Image 1 (tube, rainbow, N blue to C red):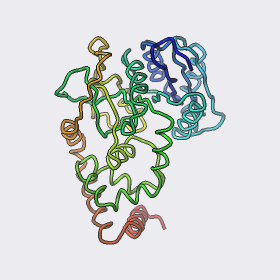
Image 2 (cartoon, rainbow, N blue to C red):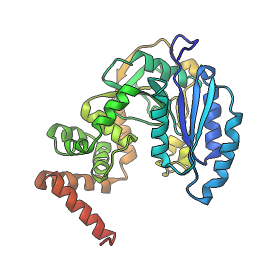
Image 3 (cartoon, rainbow, N blue to C red):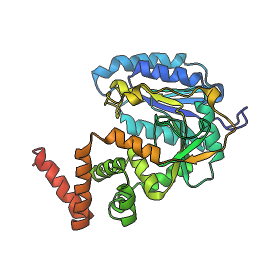
Image 4 (cartoon, rainbow, N blue to C red):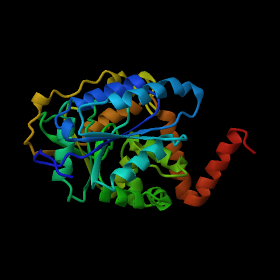
Length: 332
């Protein structure tokens, strides 16, 4: 699709259901971004699964026709409840019939005016780099020892506003099969990497409990760690997640005010022509240790799981673990 900018303006896709105030704030912040008028907005409005969702759903449905500031607004109104994963996946599949990349956000994010500029330029510049999987607009609330214009390269994926290429998404989905779980938890090199940090221990626990792989933050971060690939992020976040008010699907712990109160980047502080990439891990590891320091029980579980796999093998360890969980919950 042609654009009057010096680079491609990729479409934004947003799945939503009933969080009207969050959705409206998200749309308004995107409409205020540089290049919004050259950008298509594609919305997936899911069908309410229960009566308690209907009021917010109706407000969003009535609001969508009034959205302005974009090149075009297209809405897929679901006639049955898809759930967040299916709703998102169908939007992604649809947009890839028209474009070779897209920008994804959930409906509870708000953005710096520089967000679209950063993501679009990243999608253009790193399209052919096999080691860069995504361009993320979010950055962790850490004091990085570098300039505000630097680009961070690391292996912690954030879905809070990101750009992704269709071909690389296909490769990732092909890799994230049941065999990915087996390899991640049996291969010596993979295990060494997964045990590198507290967060990876928690991710190991999640992976062992997963029956079906879906592309959420934690699985993608594992994928990046094992395959030695990266995402790129700004030094200062271009995104704030409003889901920490308790409404977010994976952001229910409102004690984490470090996210809830996070500031987003002033566009004037960005050097738009900067190509400097800085590889960081130590700062982020320390940050993740702080976030996960109250989850020692999960770290112990992860250690036990890895020990079981080493002694019994993957299949038997998983079978015994599943049986133990069923007995614990009184499932016959």
